[in-house]
Picture 1 (spheres, chains in turn yellow, red):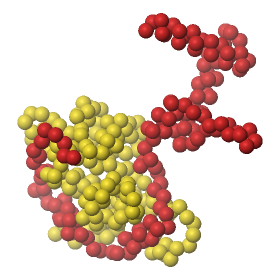
Picture 2 (picture 1 turned 90 degrees about the horizontal axis):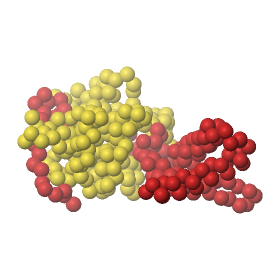
Picture 3 (picture 1 turned 120 degrees about the vertical axis):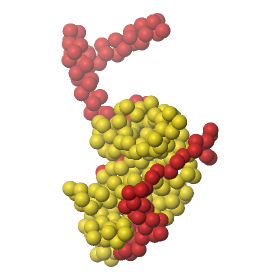
Picture 4 (picture 1 turned 60 degrees about the vertical axis):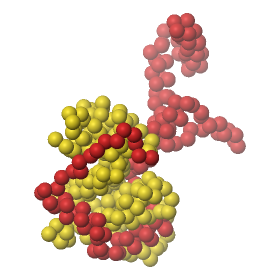
Length: 180
Length: 134
C-alpha cells in the first residue's frame, strides 16, 4: 500500500513523534493539541497522510479543519459591505496544513490541499449546514504563494496572513462545470 | 529527594495552615479548606484560559497576578481556533473584492477540482530523505 488519509485518533500517537517540519508551531500543534482538539474540545478534526511503503508506517503530512465565522471589527459604514453577505459569514477554516520536511517537494502539499478542498466542497454541496468561505492563515510567503495558486486571496500583508477562497461559485450548479 | 519532599511538605503544610486560619476554618476542616482553594483556583484558571489578565486595583495602584502556571496556560492557548475571525476594514475591502470577482478559477484550482472528480486519482509516491529540507 502507498499513502492513505486517516482521521487522527489515539492509535496514531506514536506516529506523531517522528514528524518534522521547519516551522516548530506546526509540529507542536500536531503533537500537543491536535488530538485534544479532536476528541476532547471538539474544536477541529485532523487528517493524517500515512505512508506505509516498505512495511514501515510514517506520518508524511497532515491537515486540520475547523469551523469559523468571519466578522468585522469596525461598525463603520463601508461601500463594499453592500456586496457582502451579512456578518458573521460562515466558513470552514483550514487551520493547519503541513508536510514532513523529508518528503517536501513531491506534490504532497498539493494532494493534501486537494483532500481538504474536496471534503469542504462535499460539505458545502450536500452537508446539513451552509457556509460561504474557505479560510486559511498562511504561515509565510511560500505558503501564501502556494495558496494563491489555488485561488486564495490575501486579506493582510503580514504573516500569518489570512487568506480566503469564495466557495459560492464552486458549489451547487457551478461545481459541475469544473468536473467535466 | 525524600528530604526535599519532606521540606516541601512542611512548607506547604505551614502555608495551608495559614490559609485555613485566614479563611476562618478550624483545624479539622482540611477538606473544606481544599474545596475553598479549589474553587478560587478554578476561577483564576478559567479567566486565564479565556485570555484575561487578573489584577488587583486599589485606587491608581495595580498589581498583576504573576504565575508560571498561568503563563503556561496562556502559551497553550491556540488563537487560530477562535470562533470568530475578526477582519479590519482593509481586510473587509479585500474580502469584498474577492467575493465580487465571481467565477474565475486559477489553472491550479481548475486542475485540483478536475483531479478530485477523477476516480483514478492517486496520492504521490514519496521518497524519504534522511534529513528535512530547510
